Length: 415
Image (cartoon, rainbow, N blue to C red; front, side):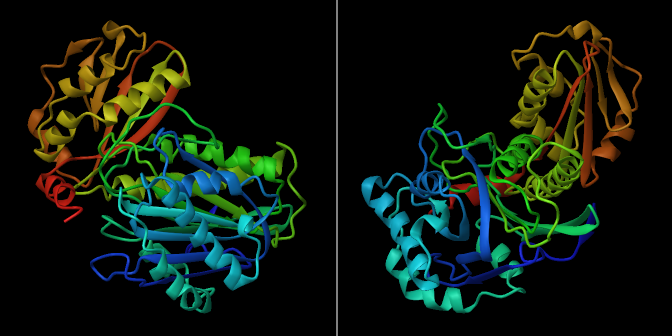
């Protein structure tokens, strides 16, 4: 896998645009369009929050279509908790794009991010549809990456390329997310989740020119999401709008991937790498943070056990505060691991803060150099390792620290 400059318009046949539609009070870009010049197969994974936003419900329904051509996304308004009116507005949003591009409405996918409970200003979107479509360009990927931002401080985009049977296949991506970031996205379906009232979201858009069946694309996206976006947390709050899309238009001309052979594994590894990179960008730009924190749990009885513990540690507000204060308080790591509801023997457990072993076999390493560890924590990236010594299971999660700006950003979001 080779990283190349750009984002969603790097793969062949994809265009994008991003403009100002007046949805955000700030006047910043807030409406974007991603378009495939030829029919593409598509897949998506979505929030498992029971309180799903209208655009999520519409995209789940539209993904039943065999092919897709475009994704329209707005920021500044989540179009959530608006009842049947919200559903109608999401449908109208797709309809404007379908009409402008002379496509069927079911070929359009929709995403929204922003404040919950306010009606989507669809008239503003309708008035800007012509401009949005006219602005589609092979150089428009960065415009899209900017237009989807809410509490993000920087745009997030990346592209990679790999060879499949002598053909160069490219994958591009863009994502956003600052607060309310604790995704658990799965293929279309309902499940229990938290009802929340903060106002940010994780959105991700991936394009590729690989030739692949819809079923194999769905499987690849689900697997890549589980090891990347579903392993990040800023504040432990699951959004109502979390969505991750991928479109594949086949223009790379590779032999079609229809089974889990060598080409599929190469593609999956590249997709996984791209998703992990984007996920780390999100975790490293959490609303009010100074450092990216990587948490590695190994020696668990199963990968799932390791995953549960890693995610539990990543949601510890006390740990996040300690890291901001550059305090080597590893006890908060131990406490979080022990409260995860996973069976392991604390008496076998080791914990490391960076290179320093702070817990050995369940007992404190009283001789570790606290000042050396404190100096390590001052860095922009912090690595935490928990070795349970109970099996071969492992998992990695990413989070960030907390500081005063997090409270400021999220207390003033709607005002």
